[in-house]
Image (cartoon, rainbow, N blue to C red; front, side, top):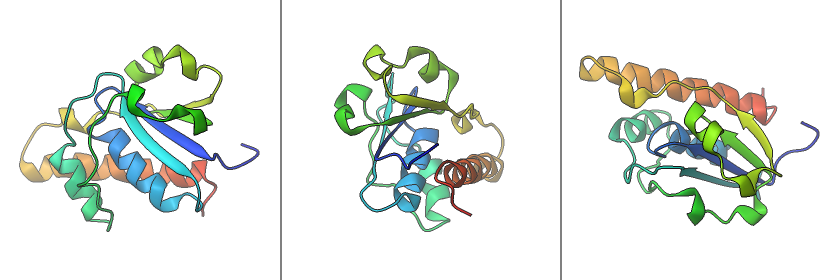
Length: 141
């Protein structure tokens, strides 16, 4: 990437886990003035409690976020669409075709099974993966 994006849209299916964590991390890491949004092509209507918990562990509060449809995002300032699941990549709205797109094939932590701690471990791994990818995207050491 030649220059830093000025507006980033993180797109997922439900906008409840991966995209919410990515929005929180990118907002924290991106240069001042960068707008970061997240949305879903089929919004779940909630932000997953484990995603909120995993983010709080690294000092980022996404408890005020809400799951929203891509149509609610002011896309005129978006110059990078970041899809974090295959369904969002395949169904990304046509009006975003002119925007640079990057796909991160992240597994869905909401599908994790096991004890509460095992599920949280899956969310932590997902959060850490998003943080690593975000730093690479923004060229942060």
